[in-house]
Length: 350
Image (cartoon, rainbow, N blue to C red; front, side):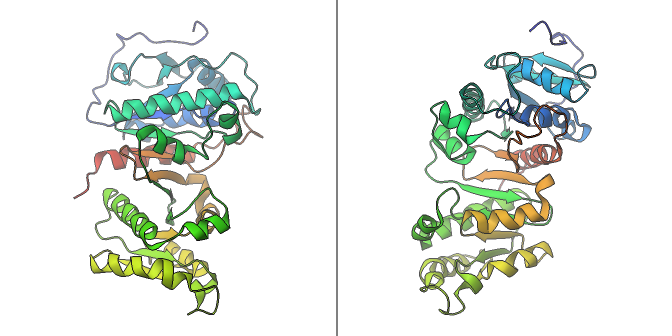
């Protein structure tokens, strides 16, 4: 695209081949994704950890750089494949799918942006499954825009499970103070309680344990929340859900040496985790985990999909249509998501 400053493939290359290649998907082009990506991939700390290649639209990234006042301080370079990317100061590498028309309004839902967001993820998943990148880091998409384009998935987690042929995955949120993995996520509360059973609890805890080990915690202490207030308080609240749905899984896990404790009252579990008693909290349903995490550190929070055959991290915020295109978006969560993608891509289990 002629409006975008470019660098040639013959530009001086810094040998960074020891760092993992991370595919960064642009998310919904009408949201803040492009604006958090630009500073995040130019960040010196990011470039010291990984080689980020954006899957998106070069023209939209240039518009985002202009909104940020950085359009004269970086080069947005189109590459055909991640292997072609070179990394020099101020250069942004993008596999340009060319799906976003110039001047697409910021902050408005559209099927065009929804379709593009889907194609970015599809491309990144294909690259990761082919081992041409070592991880995926995603900017936020808008579910309504995704659905209007004909892709009816609750979010990134379920979409990536579909694209990678994975039957069951878990959502994990990570902040500096607390990490939480969810037994259930994007379903109604009554449906969540019906869905929870010992096998699902056990598999979720195992996925969380593996993710923590991959991140370098050799023997993580895992706190498992109950379902009812006070974790049922010995049958006082609820109908014995903790004894029926959670206790059998924890007994099996502990017998195998996994440090899974509970069921715990959710209102104290997160306090204990924030002070360091637990490395990971297992939440039974969406809001039980999301509420505390967003209070304790949404600005630098990261969303991980655990159980996929590929590494995937994401910002822990939405498209923020109300500030999109203004240059006010905070890139801290994207910087942290890239850090964790790089960390998980280079640490092996066992």
